Structure formats: structure tokens, C-alpha cells
Image (cartoon, rainbow, N blue to C red; front, side, top):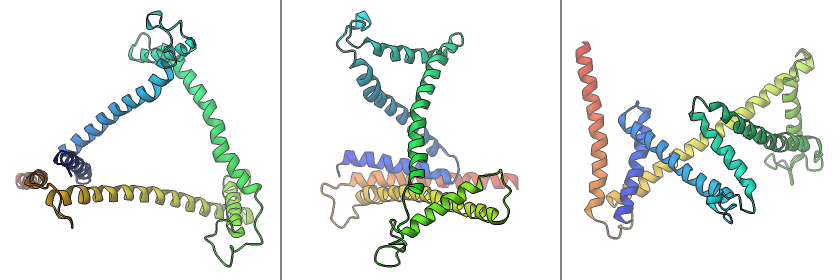
Length: 273
């Protein structure tokens, strides 16, 4: 690893440790990392929106016109309409003209809603209804292909569980009839189905966060620690003492802050006593 690249790797490792330090309490290291993330993210997305949004969808559409004619001589001058609407949104920063921004905002929300509702209905409602109602249960392979196999998602048993579970969950939300007797038992089974779904979703989210945590630990170990101390099986080509100096400098900063926190705590405890 090149020494310049190792400096960037050290910065990444330090910021990772700074974010994890919030598990102890709010501290200057965490605040530096937090502000850096917010600032870099804002700048990054501003550049992305310019190059992927404004430039190709506005200026490149009007590039056959002249800017001193406000691109009115372009072959596609109607693209100036969304540009004007976008400029109108900036009137939010004026107390006097803030009401102007309501017009482009209302238009944007209306169009976005009109586009999103059919997509959401198609993906989350229609397809689910089709999977439950249109697909017949595979009775020939009810327990899976070649024997009892619950992992076979095409088996009839899996389809039956999905159908019964969906109906039970819908019955739970049907409040026009009292949940008693067989109807109430089905609604109670619907609660179990909902809890299983929520639990699986929560477990998936937790595992995704744990995988990110593991990735950061591997980053610190493989890309920073082993390179800094040359602890790999194969010695690093071009390794020099600067790697270890940077590593121990970061360690000294972290340990020094911990010692400072301990001394501050002991002094506060003595004063309170």
C-alpha cells in the first residue's frame, strides 16, 4: 500500500473509531466525524444532482440555443418551464415571497403522488393479490419435490401457508365483526403472522447493520492495522517506519483522550465527596 493511500486509510479508520465512540458518550471525536459526514454528503449530493440531474436534463436539452436569448431559440424551449419552477422554490428564503414556492411544490407533490400511487399499488398490492389468488396450490408436490422439503418455495404447502396467513392477517384488521369464536381465532392467528413478518423484517435490518459493523472491523484490521504494523503473512513491499508512526499516533490520541476522561471523572468525584 502506498504511504499516501495509507494516510487516507488511517483517516477512514480514525473516523470509524470516532463514530463508535458515541457508544460511550457524546465527545469531540464524534462531533468532528458527524459534521464531516454531513458536510461531505451535502457536497457530494450537490455535485451528483448537478451532473446527473440539472446538467443532462436542462442544459444539455437546451444546448442548441443561446444563453443570451435565455435559450428561447432552442428546439426544446419548454424545458425552461421546470427550470422556472425550480427557481421559484428558492423564494422560500424570502418572507415576502415565500408563498410563490407553494406553486412549484404543489405541482411537484401532485405529479410525484400520481406517479408513485400506481407503482406502489402494482408492486405492493396487485402483485400480492395475484400471488395469493391466481396461483393454484401445487397439490402434486405439496410437501416439496422429491419428499418433505419445506425449503422448496414452489411447494404447495408454502403456497397454502402464504394464502392462509394473508387471509388471517386481513381478518385481524376487519373490525366490523366482533373477534369471537372461529373468527376471533383466525384473527389471533393473523396477529401471529404479523408478528412473524415484523420480526423477520426487524431481524433482517439488524443483520444488515451487523454486516456493516463487521465490514468496518475488517477494514480497520485488514486495511489499517496489518498495514500499519506490517503484520501480514507477506511483508508489505516498500514498508517503512512512517506506517507505524501514523498508527501509534492515532492510538496515542485515543488513549490520551481516555486518560483525560478518567482524570476528569476522578476530579469530579473528589469535589462531590
